[in-house]
Image (cartoon, rainbow, N blue to C red; front, side):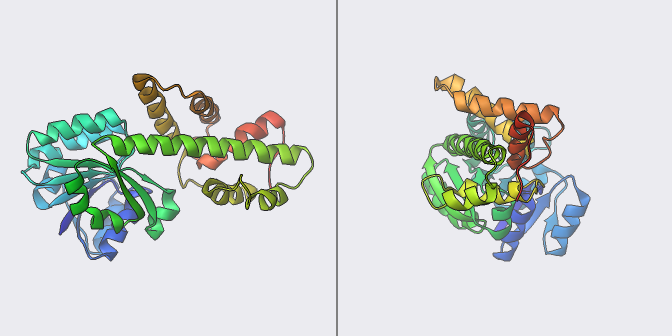
Length: 294
């Protein structure tokens, strides 16, 4: 099977590498020449446009920043739709607005081009080791046909409903992650300010009800002051904006999400939006005039 992969950023590059490791033939497209060279060195070939990717491959995967980029690659001039043939499939693994997933899907369907929306969770570490969680919306038969392709990049691949459902699940995921990081940050700053070592608080609570995957992944980064981006605050801001937009459309208030979004916006004003979302602790540290560390 020949797979097209468009978008070789923090997540897309390791995901594409795992597809190559699994034995798939890859055609890649990205704006970064050095990343393209790296993938070519591993056996991938290069396309010059999304249209060419669609012409050369059976299934296309996109891993792009947001809704406008997905629409442009799929439906714009020189886009996938121009190389579309009946039976070909787009698996969009970007995290975008659910309504955009449906819009793109319906436009492609007019050319007989199937689509799954399949956003991922787990950040760069899980993209590297191939243990991402994938939430998939779209035709169940198409999902089953390409399950093995997605599983080559993931530890968990779950079909959650029709097109757009994958991104609804991702928005729910991003809400839970954001609120967890905020709660963890608030608690660690409280411990630091009260004179109790945050490291010991982390060790004391991790095995109880407060324990979580978020706590395990992010507390050590905070304690070690490691804020290199596994998942940038700027991208989490994008996701939370999509949460709020979708929540307004369906009538589901999201007051906690709105609060965390404003915290992240404050960090953006301070120039910290390029850091990992664990930098949310810095919002609380600024308020409390303290710093959490081991």
